[in-house]
Length: 80
Image 1 (tube, rainbow, N blue to C red):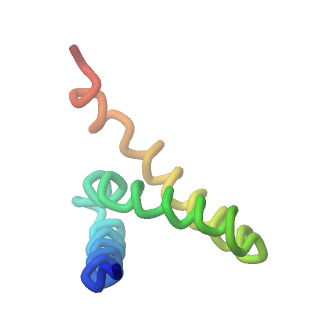
Image 2: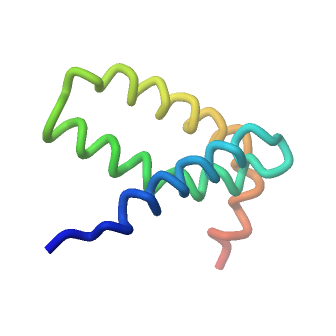
């Protein structure tokens, strides 16, 4: 059984999340959108092809910087 719609969906989420990361006003939303995809990319590279891990770590560093830079916008999501 193949899921033919899954990879186009992941690709669309990557593009949308990347565009949201580029625009400063929507950067916080872009981090939330791209973080699950980035986690899947990291786990896939660890298990299948670790030669590209340095590239993944650079992307994680960029998204981590954006997460740290917009931390105050996430606090209401974590509030009780």
